[in-house]
Image 1 (spheres, rainbow, N blue to C red):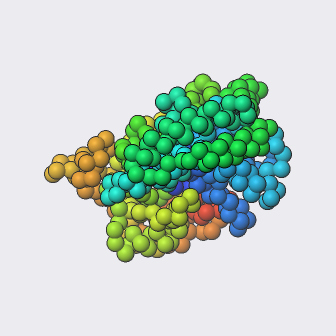
Image 2 (image 1 turned 60 degrees about the horizontal axis):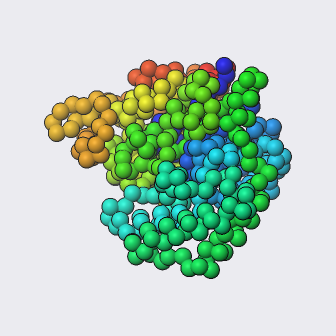
Image 3 (image 1 turned 120 degrees about the horizontal axis):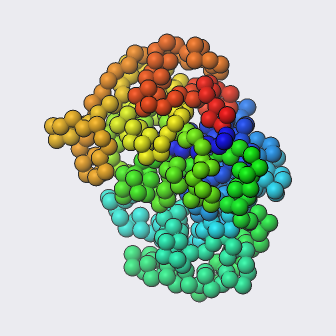
Length: 432
């Protein structure tokens, strides 16, 4: 078939953008299937860094069709800014290369105000939201009062949806003691939303039909996920999760095609673990070693700039993510960051209330009591900047990577030894 789904196998920030960029060389279409601009996919090419929040990471390859699927929520202003940035850098000059699903939902200004007001009200119980309005937009979608892209490009439909949405938002804002929208602000929002719709209209289409037709014509399709399996709304560390489904199975729903088109599943994982925001993290290193890992790995959020919490690799969590997604291929990133760290540790089980546990708990209060049971791996020295084969790596680094894939029961397909395009070894091509 030659199709694949690329998803995060941890708590996000695994390096999906750079893996999607690499895989896009062989893909014809790259389809982002969920989430919004709470994502920050970083791609480094020839020393130039591009951070993408909503446009698919295949955009840096000329001629690739980039699709924003129905499962996404779109902030028009952010998307237009991203498109302008890409056009200025000559990375998106052909309008036909970007297609936005007419079924995708729209993030409006009141979604962001609600998001921030609620998080402020939670105080010590905050969830760690990015404040981008993602959750409230998905709430309106589920409550069947949201605005879709086919609405925003219809000037006649915008006023009623915005007014009704703003009035409902005001009731929630007032309930948490936040500032409600005035009438003149709502009218200004209508005018701005209409203007955004006019600008985006040429890009809006039936994205699902486009993807289906491309598949029927034998084109290779790469489905791009955001966040990570452990942040999935249904199966992640609830309530410390995102507001959409991050798993591979959702790619068909979010893209608007049947699951028979999905192909192989590439799970992207760091050689260690990170988490941003709140929630349990059994292998977290709240010590100088964790700080060293953060600094060496540049572990600061691409979207928020927040420092990420860092820790050892957690195989209990990775086994869980492998089952949830049906991962067939492992893309292991940031192996180079562990060079020179001394003896490495990998969590293979938890101890919870005196019992050894090898399954990932669903209750975060139970997970919060988990103490990691570690196995150790030999230290390794410097990793080559641009390795071409597994044999180019120090033997202990090879052993570490292959052991992880073996423990998960998947094939090791990509091994990244640096942040840039070309700093990876492709052992198996998931799109072949």
